[in-house]
Length: 353
Image 1: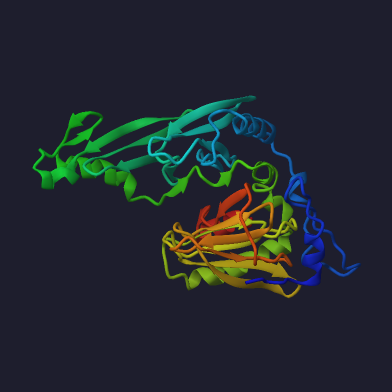
Image 2: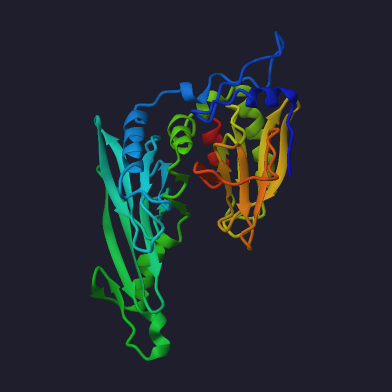
C-alpha cells in the first residue's frame, strides 16, 4: 500500500539527507501561511546530552559486545524531562540493559536491569523491573530510583509452576521464604501500576543513531503552535472513542521530511490496529495499519518506509511519500514506534505543550 501526500510533502521528502535521515521542511508556498512549515529542523535542536550519548553509542557499535541483536533506547526513566540512554546488548534471556545518564558533566551508569534485553518502566512510581518465567520457576526484581541511581528494592523467586511435578512450592522475597499472600502483596504493589517495556527501540545502524540522538527528542521545538493545536485536538477526539486502556502513542518522522507524524497503537498485542496521523494542507489526515506482536510499527529510517510482520512473518509495509514498498527489504536502521506514551489526556497535553 502506498500513500501519496501533497506535492509539497513529496518535494520536502526529496530533500532528505542521506547522512541524517531527516531534513528541514521549507516554506515553499510564498507569502501565504504554510501549515506544513515547521519552526526549525529537528537536527538543529541541541541538547546537552547529545554528544555524550552519540559517543557512547558509536563506541558500543564497534565493540565486540555489539551484535545483530543489539539495540538501544532513549527514555526518560528518572522523570526529569531528560531521556536516559539504554543499551540492550542482545535479546538473550540473560541479557540486561545498561542505563546511562549525564550526572554533572559525566556519562554515568545509573542502573543495570532486565531480561531478554529489556525491562519494565513504571512512570508513576519511578520503578523499573523485570520478570523471567522458566518452565518450572519465575524470578524477577524491582528497583526504585533514589538520589540519581536505581537500586534493587527486592527480588523474588517462586517455583509454583512446578506444582504438577510434586515439588515443594516456595515463595521467596530477597532469598527469604514468605507466604503466598505476602508474596503477592509485595509484587502486586508494582505490577498493578501502568508500565512500558523499554530497552529495544533502535537498531545500531548509523541512521538509527543519528535519528535517535538528533531528531527523536526534538519535536516539541520543531512543531509550530498551530500544528500542535491540530494534533492535540485530533488526538483528544480520538481518545474519547478509544476502546482500550492499553492504547499508547508517539511522534516519529515516518517519511523523513522533518515534520513528525503521530502513531497511535490501540494495544500491545499482535496485529492490533495502529493509526497514523499526519498533517497536510487541509489539516490532520489518517491512515490505518496493523502492528507487530507488541502492537507497534517499525520504521526503516534509511528508506522512509514503516512496516510490521504478520503472524507468518510476512511484512506489511506502508509509505507516506512517493517511495515504493513493492520490493522493500529492511535496512540496518530500524526504529520500533507507537508506544512511547500512554494514550491519556494528560500525556496529550504534555507532548503538545
